[in-house]
Structures are given as C-alpha cells and as structure tokens.
Image (cartoon, rainbow over all chains, first blue to last red; front, side, top):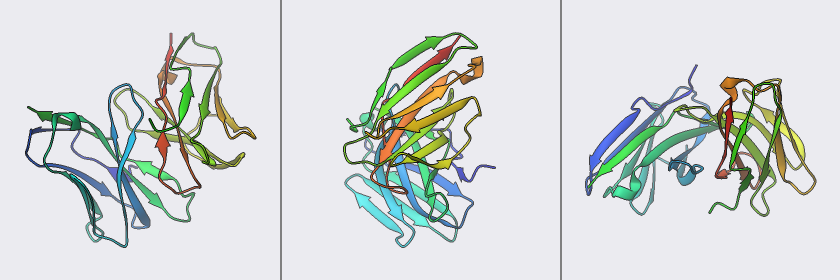
Length: 113
Length: 112
C-alpha cells in the first residue's frame, strides 16, 4: 500500500511558465515533508521541506504548499527553467514511528525551451 | 556535492555472488540510510543505522545486511545475488534521525 503517491509520472512545461508537482499521502500522522530533485546518474538532492504546522514554505523559485485536510502537497516552480528538468520525489515522515521517510515514486519534469 | 561518498560507482557481478557497497556520511552526521532504486521505481528504504546501531529496517531482504562502523562509515552487503537485485543503491546521511537526509551519488549494481 503506497502511503505517498505522485500520480503524475511525467509533466512537461514551457520554459518561464509555472511547474506544479503534486503529492498525496494517506497517513494523517505524517508531520514533515520534503521534496528532492534527482538528475540521471546522480543521487537525490534536497530541495525544500515543510512542517505540518505550516501550510506554505518558500525558497526562491520553489514553493511548497501543504493542505493537511486533503492530505495533499504541491511543489510550485516559478519560473521554470530547462535546468529544472529532473525527477522530483516527495517524501513524508511520521514522527515517533521510526522517524524515517517514505518516498513517492517520483514525477519526471521536462522543461521545454 | 552532498558530502556523502559511495564506492564503487559501478559494479558488475554474476548471480550467486556477494558484493559490498560502502558509504561515508557527511562530516558530523550520525545516521546512515540505505535505499534501493530499481529501474524507474521509487526509492525503497532498506535500513538505517544511527551511531553504530541498527535503528530501523525497511524492505530489506534476508540476503542483505549492513553495518555501521565506529568511524561512522557504513557497508551494505548483498549476497546470493539474483538478477532482480540489479538496481541503484543509494546511501544517505543525516545529523540525527528524522532529519533531512543528504544522498550520495549511488552505486549502480548489475547482476548478470
């Protein structure tokens, strides 16, 4: 049973436009969420995080939104750049339950010039 | 560069063999995690060590084992290898547990 879902395997966006990557989770006990970016032949790179006590966190072009009632988070990239083309993983942690992260299957983002 | 190093980068071996993957965490990090990523799949958590002790186990096969040494580096041992074990194996580290993890570049294992 997948606790963290990324239902879009891939997404294509024009350069300069907004990219929105979605993530849904089933465990209401998750309290901390992260987004990772992964280029081919490299390890995932931490991008941005959000705690369940917040509903938004911003870092430059990247903003993560959390909707706890819907068990949904999204990553917005504005403006999108060709260098953003990568696989994006959403991850969630349940505090006091092994403290480990559950990763989603990833969404491949292609930013077209 | 995340500060996490993994060796070797690539490994080709035959079914039935045993291999050892090595990971050095970021300076100061006490937790080490191992993940497996099969072709086009997500990251599957295998096992975590914290300051030398096993902290959590995920979907790790009995043929696989790991340890973390006093200098905090970690090794993942894969034995009786099968074709299906071919995958990318990532190591990650964090200061403690439950904190943001920083990933190494991975070891690509190919079992023929």
